[in-house]
Image (cartoon, rainbow, N blue to C red):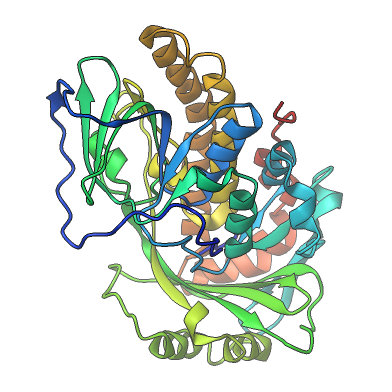
Amino acid sequence: MVTAFSSSTLSPSLLLLKNQSRVKPICLSTIKTTQNVQKEEIVIIGAGIAGLATSLSLHRLGVKSLVLEQADSLRTGGTSLTLFKNGWRVLDAMGVGDELREQFLEIEGLVIKAEDGRELRSFKFKDESEGQEVRAVERRILLETLTNKLPLETVRFSSKLAKIEKTGTGETFLELIDGTHLLAKIVIGCDGIRSQVAKWMGFSEPQYVGHCAFRGLAVYPGGQPFQPRVNYVYGRGLRAGYVPVSPTKVYWFICFNNPSPGPKITDTSVLKKEARDLVQNWPSEILDIIDKTPDDTISRTPLVDRWLWPTASPSASSGSVVLVGDAWHPMTPNLGQGACCALEDAVVLARKLTGTLDSGPTSLENALKSYESERWSRVFPLTIRANFVGSLLQWANPLVCSVRNNVVIPKLVRLGPLLEHTNFECKPLK
């Protein structure tokens, strides 16, 4: 029942690599390295939340890494994401939690309404889950905060991966589209849902789950009027939600059933109209929030996930290459755990790697397997649970929706058990 739909520009002193338009296919061959290449201990592919959090976790433990980002700057698009107490514990361990808390409102609870505006149920987070902490965080600010804590030349932009190859020494050879060659002792794939690293490792594309989401970030220059709580509105095959992010911004989403992902629409004014049309007869505050949303913050994305079936799915690591976050376990946003799990992955992997860099290949591979074992038992159940919750909330049958709104939500739902997955212990990184 806890749903969160989540959709930073640096100084030019960061090293930029020249971009090229022609992208070579990712190569799966094994080579003997004879070229003169730049050697790195750890190379992280992707400067999103997972990549930057992994790099910062390693940095806090005294381990250097290089982050390669294909874009020419931090990708600050998107809106916001919801972080529960497990995410905040990780950010505290990284030393950035308090800096972020100062910028975003703490969300006290949630309220669920029917599409006619009738309130069905409300909860207070701290009454339901001891020590719970919920805040919606702007993705741009989170990325900037993580990056600013890294040494200046940690992130290289315009660095798109063209080729991955194993070497005879156990290291991994990387070629970028500008011709740059690197040889890495460890490669960490943090390149998101459409991960090229995951594809190289044999993972299938994430599967579309049958619904899409509009997202946006409304701006109220004179101050937004809403209480600090998550607001959900449930209809038939359609649901919406909004939550205050800061004193002047409100994040919102609309999730709707669709038999296919549909065409990609780049005209954001069209996206705004489509989103508005879906909830035209719903509570007026939703329409007002959409109207106050700058067009360039609105997106429409199909929701996807990947179920990591034991024995059937590839391993999260192959030799000295390993996956983190959405690159490994994309999940739907119905539990608000995508970003939280990526943050957890980052600190767990960093701790596993510390102390193994000077060991042999066997110790390194054992550390990566230990990371996979620990994290799989957490992320696989969450992926299935998020999918299941989303399917229930997207019911379209009128009779089933009536039972949901008049019996299940008012009388049966307990929020506490739905938040148990936010319990995650994370000691400071030292």
